[in-house]
Length: 288
Length: 268
Image (tube, rainbow over all chains, first blue to last red; front, top):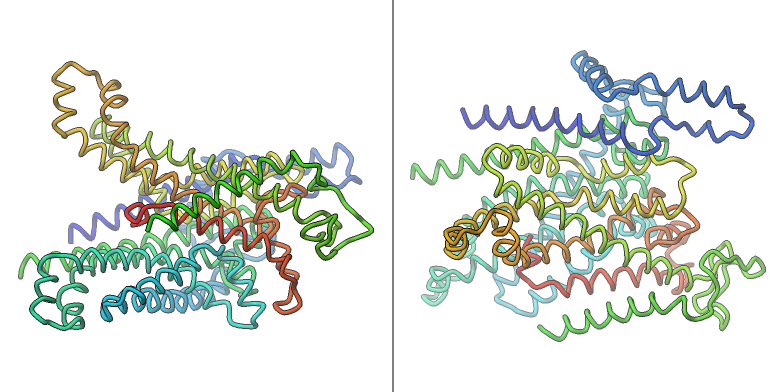
């Protein structure tokens, strides 16, 4: 219970600081408060000055952030400048689409990664290991946006692209774990005594890998959400990744800070969930 | 497995040499337009053809490669220095400073840095010069990618501080700074070097993603991301091989960077 409370408190502090950092970065980024309309050559100096003054109302970072937190308590996330809609409505509309994309992507990525990391061990084949390494390596060298573009060109659903972005990162880690554990003395003994690869995997290697894999599961969620930006933007999937891209092009600070907060919250929740599961496993092992 | 690594290093050296030597040969400038031959196929005058604005593709590819291969290592160096500074300070400066710095590291690890990156990148002034945009893009990359390595550096520094040779140096009267410089830093070099080499392909790919989203280096200065953006206008079977050259070069160069890493360096 104490561990849970500590994790929740840590989550809240990091989230508040994260929001503040996001707001600070935005506030002090070069170009803050500059409106595209200022470039309109038909405007005279007075109009440009008026535009600048209109944007300088929320100049202080502290005031901006406190104002934001106060509204947040009332469920008000502000209004998007670029899309002229409440941020809350936009998030409610777009979030299910991203959850679906990220969910499919994570499923595909993990199945592929674990399959290719474990199969060479089960087959005890160096050729299979080399093929899996090359296959994962090829995807590791491709930018996410290009991968998404190939899916568009092939008229395939872009959601799968997220899976192929997550897959090589999970594979690399899982493969190293399998190799490390498979080289341990008790595993080699089990092999020498004639125990099959599958029982060794299920009884010795997978249980030993679980804590690290759980930690990686938390990290892979944030990889998938980051991949959602280029994939949704290129594949025209109406999720929060596409929304972030539109907000960036439209210089919509209100929306971008909220999106950053939402994705930070999801990342923290997934990491905290993995920590809690790991803690519970460790406790179960200790009591056994 | 030494030969693939050697080949990768050789290829990278060749690409870097081509980028450095490129301007020495009298080719067209990367921004020069040949308006009578837009979207042309490869010829003697334009080895990789021209783009839809009539600019020489080879000149743009060489310039884009130069930009990416110069600035990605610079960003990686920045992130490595930050990781080393934060990690070593956290381990050496005492309990409270260590806690504060590790909390900041946790914070950076939790933040979706691609979201932050596009946020800050999008807020640059619209009339920013290409040089400023490329500098800001890579400085942002460098300043956001240090957190994971800082934790490793902190743990290693702590372990080194209790090592016998460091205790012996301390007993011999070495001050904190001298200990850090003469005893700890040399032993941290493998970790910092791994962080540097691992970061380069990550930053190259991130810039490529930003460029394809229109948030990378501003035109007319080319970068790999900007050059890849052209692919968005192609259909799979009507495109020509020369139009995919920036992608091919990027994939091969990133692959070479991965091959140059030792197995233990890429184990995250």
